[in-house]
Image (tube, rainbow, N blue to C red):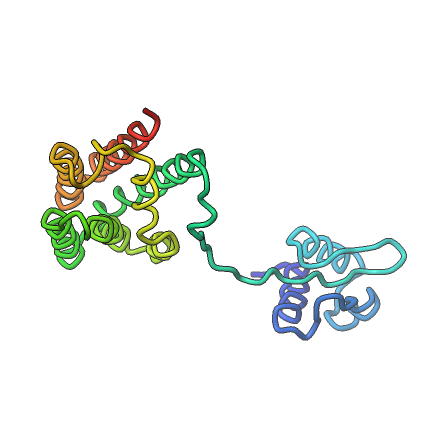
Length: 224
């Protein structure tokens, strides 16, 4: 059951979010709010304070309270041009370690026959991919894991990064870490094997460890 301040907050918040009280508009006076909601002055003041705490209104002494602009939703994007230095590339790998380690754990804990089939297919495609298709196949494998989390934000994030999250680190590595080097290809495939096997087995802890090791190895290769 709502308290009286909560009732006033809810009513004003609805008006703000609907646009009935536009950004910059002054809230009704205390007397008007007291009459509209049949509450005391103390209740009105507490309600306005709560709206302030939520970042919806701003109060100026002697002038009253005014509606602040509700932040516009924005999609996360990251352009290739924003990754300019070796430091930026390392920072992106660090970011991926934080995100994709947990994604692997969630994928393992929520694996289904469909997501299992998708990860298996992506893994096999990477194994069969030649040098020219390696970046796209590598990205598809990581995206399949993100999709297996059953959390669209992981997929949205990886889609915003795109294959460049795979490509850019490789441009900073020597020839011995390219997909034309048999030893390197075998190493990456083995790392992918471990990630996929843990996820398909539903072993969340091992999946996290395998993904962290895989991306951590990428980072170590970049710092040599």
